[in-house]
Length: 388
Ligand code: GLA
Image (cartoon, rainbow, N blue to C red; front, side, top):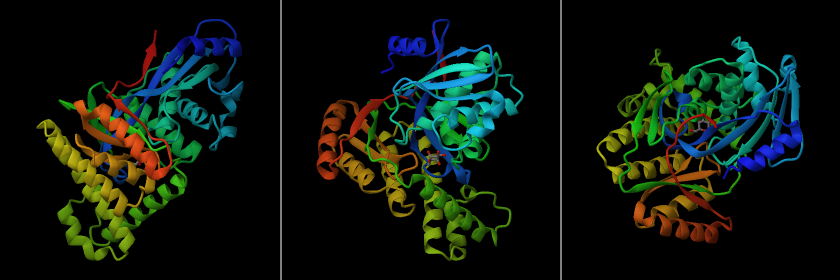
């Protein structure tokens, strides 16, 4: 939980007394639609109650100081005209990259003292980075008295991560952190970056997020490898279908027709995941509209199996936690969420079974893997806000 009094005390110790503004941006859980944002597909994430807070005060000069409430001292410092020197993956690059993008858009920023406080597990597939980026953009815009749409915020923070930090992510995470709506999932068309807010009428069911506490080792390199494999698949199909812009324009029937063009078995498996996952997202939203939660759960299970067998981004811990979850009466579906290779799972569980489910899955997961699992019921929440 965010401890406002403690955070204010740390802020004052670091930066002195005076007016402080506090902003929040959520993390996200992706309900379904994995590894298809960068293939122009549909994804269906929801914003979480957990996220990143930033305490901030404008400075007279153009220096930006960054600190975190769980680490001592000021961690990074840079003048706004020297941001280029901060490129890379060091702590602070995410925030500086966002400020750099805002300046490129002509926004007149001021120097700032900032203190970050997170309630999200770091690197666990719940978009801790995107949440930091979005809260930085949101706070900097408010201090500058400037306005941008939340879609622009999503796009500029994605550019910061792609170009400044050097992580080749898609648009889903930044979009979801910037555009959350309580009680809704976001059906985001990643080809056009347009979104429909879909009411999550999970009558009688709860979303349970489970952290495997398995760090996402190799995640960056394997993520880039998967992106390249998809690009190869696209090139192969384009030899006949020259107009094709991205893989998610294909239906499952199209894929059957072009099957012979996919001459590499690995590439074929990746493309099959992408096309079938996109169809599952669309079907999920229809099922939810009809109140068919068990049907939606089955699609979550199918998504996980496809990510395990065709896309190969799960691993022992994610497989163990979801298998244990699925076998529990009252759990209608369970899958990995986020990039994979460790991180979190998402399950849909009958309300009356949630307590027993959490206790059972935690215990059995620890027996199976030797790792503690952290599971908690989650609600779909709003996007960025300023706290009073
Ligand atoms: C990470 C990326 C997203 C998306 C997911 C996989 O979270 O940041 O853009 O590709 O992996 O669905």
